[in-house]
Length: 303
Image 1 (cartoon, rainbow, N blue to C red):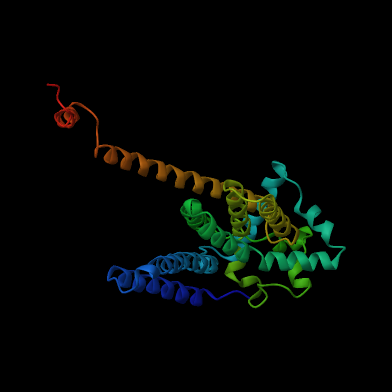
Image 2 (image 1 turned 180 degrees about the vertical axis):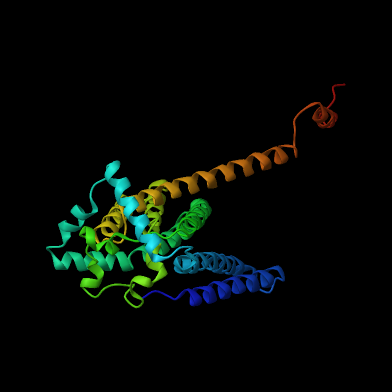
């Protein structure tokens, strides 16, 4: 349904090359002065598109990097079930049974799971880039680090609840022929990347950014609703456990804290250097005295 990862790499490389070509043209002053700002904007968009498409491609192929087989992933999923019962967390089966009697609701949940996460994130990146540029770098870096953390955790495969049909879980997407995994069935590596839920991680990023910047109430409400709906549908469709989403949110919080820590450290290094450009002190007194004496010499003298 979505762009294959190979094409994502092609788009990323093409965008990066386009940004590099525009930078060289700008450095060579090949554009009229009144066009430079527009070209700078296009170059920035291409550069950010290259980063986003690279992240997208990594996310697409993450499941193929799993280091264990399907049997290990299923056993690990059963371990998650035991942990959730011990905590305890609400039953995913109870959530799924809420929607199963209503085919239209099940189909809507399947569609939302398959479609909503990427457009919502892309819309947030565009919104942040053009409307809140001062916060965009933090958004982009938090997204990149969160996605990277998710990919690292996904190296150890974990089966989704829908593979535990003996416990009563229903693969709702397969029942209504809406599965994005149906081509390769249970053996598809991408299906074993359930922990953590990238869907929930990206939805949490969307909600955080809407709450962090000045925005209308409707915009904030839409982003909060998207996060809540995502968390609900990933569980109701048996694609993720509660713990998958909780770990995703924790990784995002860790990534955001790390990004802010690095930014503060960078500022702490930069500010002392900048302050050395002018340091009021004894060395500035002769200059002040000289200026005062020169101004006094220009005053009319009394006879």
